[in-house]
Length: 251
Image (cartoon, rainbow, N blue to C red; front, side):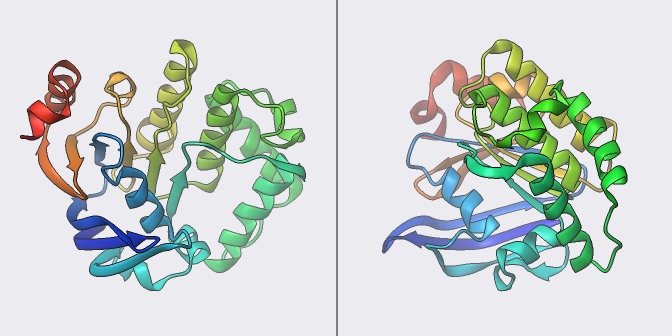
């Protein structure tokens, strides 16, 4: 599904990714862990197409297409979703209308019919229910007045509505208490793995800590340090990192 080969990228003229390679197959969950400044968020932003992140070498293929040749909205329409560490607030824009417009824009790009208001609300209620998010919250402006945990749950509702093939989640566990972490983890599983997901979907989790992996079980764990993946393993690698730290494990 996703193949990254020898990826190099700079931000503000400074090289951050220095030859990163990674392959995700359908049905897999991969976790990327590493210290601050290793390039974890940069990887997510490069894959999502964020301006200011310049690819200077390597290739990225997603579902048979050259991902780097696509604009951000085209990447989204092909089935890529990027969840942010700090979801932004958009005052004056209704969340439910924002989500409907986003979904229908993607559907039109794929040559599909737009959902009616009633069809969309039925879908939104179902996805909000998975994340235990009151539909009344989606009538507010985007993320305005939301707690940190509510912002993350709302973003997972957005993921469920857009129904991506690949979800790249950048430190989704950041700022979540234990209860919110469990709800978000169970929501990711329901959307991408168990209920609506299946063998055609994949997840790339970018995280500092092992705690999210208690709920979203990874097939593979990778250590990113110095702009490249320096070690890979199974779920036990995350436990080793938690116990020994990055420096000891990646040495």
